[in-house]
Every structure is written in structure tokens, then in C-alpha cells.
Image (cartoon, rainbow, N blue to C red; front, side, top):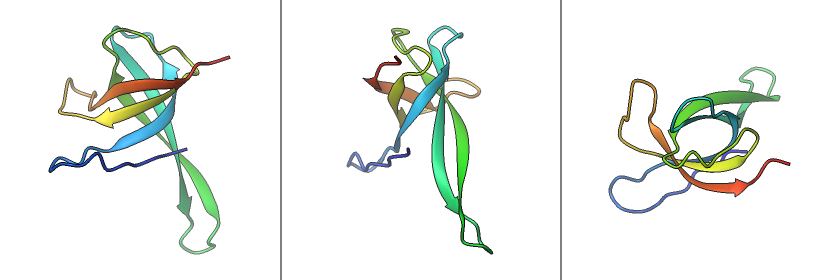
Length: 91
């Protein structure tokens, strides 16, 4: 479930909805974002998953949570995203 919103302004930061895969690092979560890509020859849709490293300042997100992340300036070697909100808690 991917979701791209235009937050307005000149920066136009991207936002995605994904599921937390890992929260083992301090103030960092790994979010899996799925998207559908159409096969160029056969036309069948294929799921593709991207891993995003996001900044979680309060360590609030847990594994399995559905979260909203937004692009930001580079915070470390891999972190280019930050946690906006936890949409749904894991059961």
C-alpha cells in the first residue's frame, strides 16, 4: 500500500505508508513499502518492496505497525525519511 501525497510548498515532500520490519536500532525503524509495477511485456502487475530507513525520535513504532513516513534531508548514511505517525498498531 503506497500513498504519495503532495504536502504543498516548494519542497513537495513525498509520503509513503508502510509496515515496520525492524526497530532494533536506536531512533531508527526499517519500513517496508510495497508498490505494484506492471510487467512491460506481459502486462501483469508485480509487487515490489522497498526498504526505507526512517527516523523515529521517540522510539514509538513497533514491528508490524502501519506507519506514515515523509522524506527529509539526509540524517545519516541510509536515513532519508522520518516517521510522521503510527496509523495502526500491530495486533
